[in-house]
Amino acid sequence: MFFKIAIRNLLRNKRRTLIILSSIIIGVSATLIYDSINAGMITQMLVNQINTYYSHIQIHKKGFNDNRLVTSYIPDYKKIEDVIKNQSYIKHYSKRVIAFGMLSSANSSAGISMIGIEPDKEKKVSDIHRMVVEGRYPSGKSNEILISKRMADKLEVTLGDKVVAMAADTNGKVNSELFRIVGIYRSHTGEFDKVFVYVPIENARNILGIGDNVTEISLITENADSTFSFKKQLNSALNNSGYDISKSEILTYQESLAMIMYLIDIWKQTSIIIYLIIALAVLFGVINTMLMSVFERVNEIGVLMSIGMKNSGIFKMIVLEAFMLGLVGTVAGFIIGILIFLPLSHNGINLGMYSESMSSFGLNNIIYPELNLMVIINSLFIMPLATALGAFYPARKAIKLQPTDAMRYV
Image 1 (cartoon, rainbow, N blue to C red):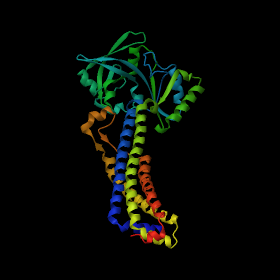
Image 2 (image 1 turned 30 degrees about the vertical axis):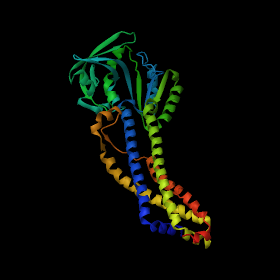
Image 3 (image 1 turned 135 degrees about the horizontal axis):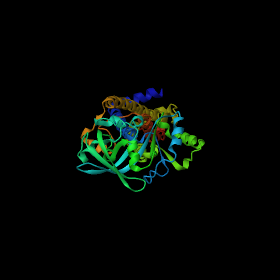
Image 4 (image 1 turned 30 degrees about the horizontal axis):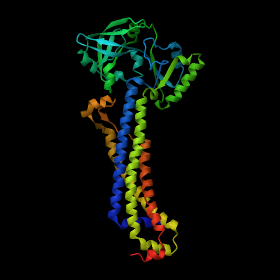
């Protein structure tokens, strides 16, 4: 009965109902698209950082990220490697040597972060081999170097040219080696391209004079969402093997990329605030609409009261009208939002004209909106609740009416 009455009352003034319904539809569809675009940007930023360099988990000497000294190589890394090989949740790993120095050509020079890699293993923990735009990925032969397009332009060099890399060894002596450029890459992050170059791990070891030691071990696990659990398991396995875990530190990508994780938290909080602002606007619209509806039906409400309808019934009837309005508007807005989202998620949003700005944030030129559980929940539940809450005040006004006065109301 209440549903029939609610539908009849909503259709009584079609224009007013359509106006408030339209505002709900536009609000839901607009926020769904806005949220999905933001979710796509955040996910892309995070995935790009993980795939370019950070992987799922990294292992360093304790305090390496606070003070990146040449001598900060991993103690007894071979014991760690033996443990890693026996962990089923670790799919791939790669050893790296990190050096900070200078790269010089005949025309210019630049400060660099030189990454000594094992090319075959590095392919499995990062996508740098997919980012080569000229030449080829290093084969592992001595004195090959892979540099970024930005670095090549700065040094005024091209494929086949020779460059000299210099860095201080463990004794403070500056060593240098001659490299030939075999490939040029372009990553998704402009800041990364400014400094990172790749050389064979043995060349990096020779320049730093660290023997067969390594600075970093990067791991890819079977599930990126379970890295904290895997970190605990790895710590436990190392401890059980007799390795002194106080000498090293294991960092998940969430810990290494603290700034991006902070941005994700901000985005989640901002999304909720935006939904609440829109819900608040709809709330006042519903209050106004339902108040007008109540005052237009004072006589009718008086009659219902006089024939025995309880206050709870009157209250339920008015709240149900508003809830149905919010529910219909939310469903329609969600469907419209999905219809807009689907082609955008497939084709993406091309922001190539802002490529420099996008690159500084670690984003591609094309953004693919993403629909996650939080976006769906926010879209489907906030508006119906807001409209139902908006009916509480008009419903309260209705149940305070005296039946005799209401029936004589003009």
